[in-house]
Length: 492
Ligand code: NAD
Image (cartoon, rainbow, N blue to C red; front, top):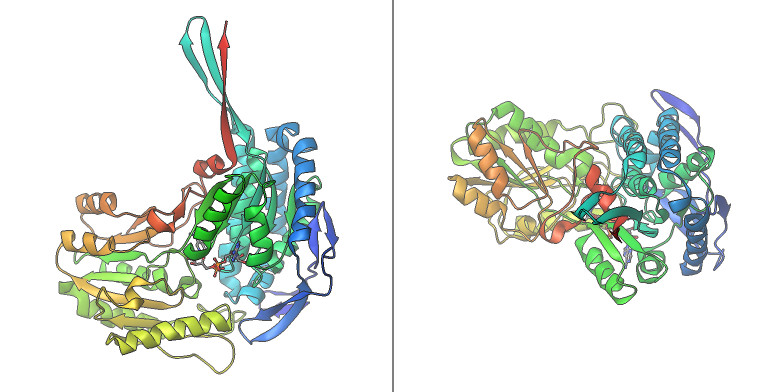
């Protein structure tokens, strides 16, 4: 495929086929079936790629087990594993423009954001876990002078990993890098909507010299390939990012097979709270970023905005102005901030929510309509004067739609913020330090951003309370997802 845009022009070759044992293979089960990959900015076909099926998962698991038992896992030192991960980070950085082009074309995100955000993040995640690989060790526990125990932090084994379409490359790095650092091997299923960056990554993994079978990529649909990974007793662990509905199914399947351990990063309906003593302009800027970043297709989007009554009207006016200035359009235009939604299905889903908000009597402050004539673009949308029973307030919309409400007291807003089955993230804007800490402690969410939003760092753990998930990604915490602790007790 030939991609061109400001700052980059060239050819990007993406291998198609399944990546098993360091080879690009045709699906064994049914070579005739393909998956159409559509450009969300135009609705046109980019390419069709072979569809993997459960029989391919079996082959990938053979490869992953073989690698775990021979070249990786206990047979490869932490410092060796670290070298591979750091090499992968360097190759991602070398190919930053190519990867950003692929990500932009496939998922519709603005090229510059893909480049400076997604691709840069993926490289830093591989480098960070490369640094961890030789620092994983157990502890010595003395019972008495003649008795001691030590713990071994062992890799859990072969991992099935399933990722969504909203941050395809970033999710690939969040999953693969910590698993490899601990010594696990992987069979990963990218989203059927956005598999191209994962497929390009297979070239880089091979170039980095990663032993065959350590990472295997099987592109396919959830109910076939995804389900095969979650139900298969030869998978020791499943790590999933996606919707709460599918997360629930995965946990059930895991419990019914070999009781494999699960890590789930699921949906959200995060509260962003602005007190009247906040830095007003900063809070407006972040409130917009909280919801419109990645076109609202962000699990931790600040989709419920609570503004203290005294500043509510002025805040709504300013945020509306900012939303109207958000440049929506061609992802390869350098001035674009917001690209298209991922698919016709998502577009329809979001428009249905917008319609339901209008029907329920919420006030559209701006947006609420399609943007442009082709592709899946939706105007940045703000609903004011919403009530807690509305669907647009309760459900994750996963689009550029924020609902605004006013509040009077700290007590009241904490109760409202926690009035959701989700608990992924939240924002608190205030200049009162004591209040910031007080509120942060009482919000039931895995992340609380104070005077900022969507601020991710590889060292800082990320994950959900309540129905937003189980386990943490990033930081030292993510290593725990892929290790088990063995106690060796010695009677001297
Ligand atoms: P999804 O749950 O529909 O799909 C996610 C992945 O699961 C895809 O690869 C899909 O093919 C696969 N899948 C679907 N059905 C399956 C099944 N029965 N068994 C196994 N795998 C199956 O979610 P999506 O629409 O791709 O992504 C959007 C959702 O992901 C949102 O709810 C969002 O909040 C969530 N998300 C969460 C995080 C986080 O870190 N918490 C990050 C990104 C996205």
